[in-house]
Image (cartoon, rainbow, N blue to C red):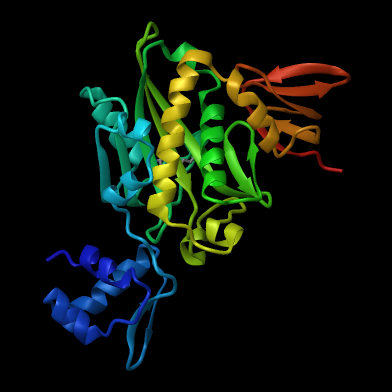
Length: 324
Ligand code: BTN
């Protein structure tokens, strides 16, 4: 019998649950409970045991819940949410929706998971996606124009994520071109857009967002860059369902605005949250790197770099602060 999901649902409240009580409630042996606990730990949950009291999660976790998510979406957003698939485990919420898109899935279709076993990051990286309270969200959106019209969409998506974080009361985060969300210089959230479709349109865009909400140290050891989570940034753990509901509302507003007006209406907010604006930076590309002063982004989403008194624009590369 599959006990991991019901076991997690019971432990999610963050209280002690004795092994005996868990085996009664789940109608399995004590050793199956123990096995289940070990598996949940291996998936990324921080569970400890105290003799005489039982098992307890280090922090309560709010399981993802479609109805609760919908309570936090705007009436306008609800009109564009034909399906919200909430999974216990998938390889990648982006891959799942790219596959559905091939078979004509509706625009607005959402996929969320408690854990991803093969989460995808930018530049072919893996997005470490342990179980235990983060957000792994993808949404399919069909843009009537072709892929060529979508330059800058990933930056507009970063603004939508920033608006959602601000709305739920998170402070102290910034955007790093093209679309990373940082806090204290460490990665808080990432965005991966995957696009398919004919040149003439329409374009299917799967917009994937990973937000570190409650990321435990053990699974995070596999992350190859400095990271943080909302628990550290806000000193409280926000409701994931509320965050997802607010985020979906912001994403849907953004797609609609972007489709008509492109990136331009998002540029002032991008600049307001730009971690490197007017700072000396180094832009590393595959073979070489260039130094200059970051001067924001243009309406196509390109980075503006002042080099020798002239503004040059770049469409790809990795920013870092200029070494002194
Ligand atoms: C990055 O490298 O910064 C982008 C990370 C994007 C991760 C999200 S998690 C939900 C969605 N599904 C994936 O496989 N990747 C994206």
